[in-house]
Image (cartoon, rainbow, N blue to C red; front, side, top):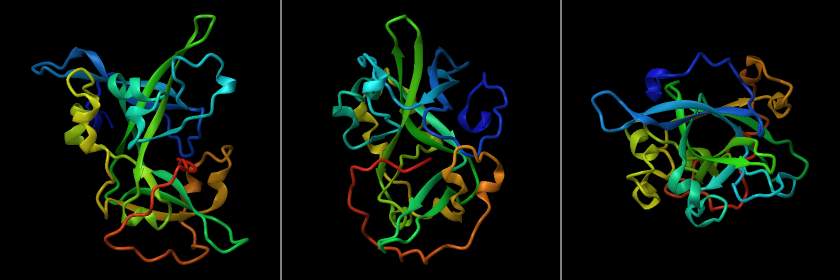
Length: 243
């Protein structure tokens, strides 16, 4: 992970197999110091609460839990526009969870672990904001940017996280020189074939189940729909069910 993300100050994180909203997640930000022999800042790893909280929110109890942000509209939304300009982050993971909900009434949803086909770490595009309470305490919070699903993922869900390629890490994190319009080309579906979907049990639906056994493959409850070549699923206002 250190090599993939180019970070210098991270300790070995514990293995976590079922991270849920409001829990801490490891993210990567651009640091203040420059890399030796480069004009780019060093990258740092920090922990943030998964659940974005804009700085202008007075009472978190009156604000919805924002675990995702639509990349197509984030720069124009009051909640996200400041972070899009000043606080873009990378969210490393080994994959994410999603549910395919069948059209048949009463049929059970099928859970999937969606991971890079080659087994490498993946970095999702994200946004970060520090929320300050009236008593002066601060909480770093974050959300993951989503885009329309590619053909592979659209058979499961019509949205997917934005994946940032390693060659684009520096450009995405450089909020001083790269405005949102300069990185808009990065917020698109990853190529078909990048991810593979592994059917897993519904144990992942309970946060208390945190062991590696939740990733064990199971037989799918129903056959997955065939790919719709050349077309993507229609956009939806739904957030991803679960990462």
